[in-house]
Image (cartoon, rainbow, N blue to C red):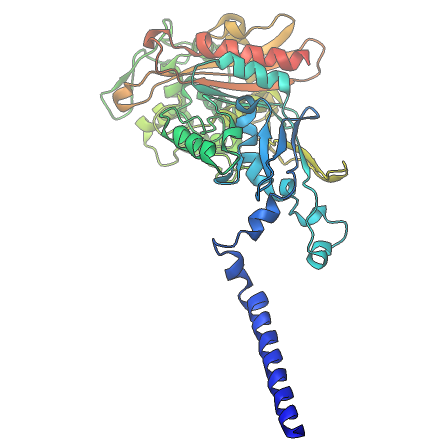
Length: 485
């Protein structure tokens, strides 16, 4: 009898060891496979079992959480959803997340280890911290001015603080309500299908995710390159530029949209946006110096994050002389995001320094304690201070007596540059209207805001599209909002 008991005990011990081995296999060796299995809903249930942290603008939450009473308990809500969608993106139980909701997801959801009271605390307690908050750099008055300025026209606006790189406005139109995508039911699926089928692509953040030919606004870069390289030493000296200008090595003749460009000085050509003068100037400056200046401003940088990734703005480094002429007036393969062109204007306004743009001022715990701050931002010099000073002169001339008078603000110093960019097969598309600018209040020691506006209005009369007429009034409204705040 004792022998049978011993055998039964040994068998039970073997079973126990087998159970322990299998438990270890499941919990250690196979943990990732089971956790990643689509049938495992525990992670999702845990994730949505508590409210998500908020995204704040000027101290006010523009997001929230709604208790649904379902297994996936809390859904994301948005205040002024379409206005702030290019900043927040969406956080959906069905379709994931984008923009700030994605780049700051660990903090907002409470999964970030930095939120734990002690290192490895959550690993031992198997608990989840309350979601943290993200404090943005957005100026609500500037954001609304940009959004209302675009109205129903397709386009984008980016505004930055030249002295810090803080992003003050980021607007893309048409927009959408990210709250429609928050859940996982029929409403979310129908909204997703509708938004993706819309040819105007409302979920595309045109301010940072799309690049455009910058047109004549790129003449800011070309003029700065020519001044820095010593190709131009006197802004008022005639440039010996023919009108029309034959592109080097070709029979193609480049013309102007305005009169008086033949042999115009750089100041006159910049004020009246003469293509022939700046195409020739780019060729004389050369590929190497043009490339160096463009890249100093931020072109060809594939790793700009704010904190989400910004599309790469490009300046072709393999062009021949004819292609360089076109690239120097913002055509050919030259492409830029509105944020990149706001950085160009900001560099001029800040004495030639380029500051890395950023959208998150700080992150905090649910109780208000700081998790991280923006901290010092990297700075690089795009041009000599003397070049920046002369570029400020040129940009002021555009607003005071050139193509950008619609951007003038009484009592403020404003500089700008208009642009009308051709695109499409054989330049058949309705041109994009551009305006880049900066503004300094009468009592300010330095410029407070730099803005880039692009309008892509396919419904407009081709002859009525212009940077000064279409985009400059929007830029003025944004600059006024910042100066008044």
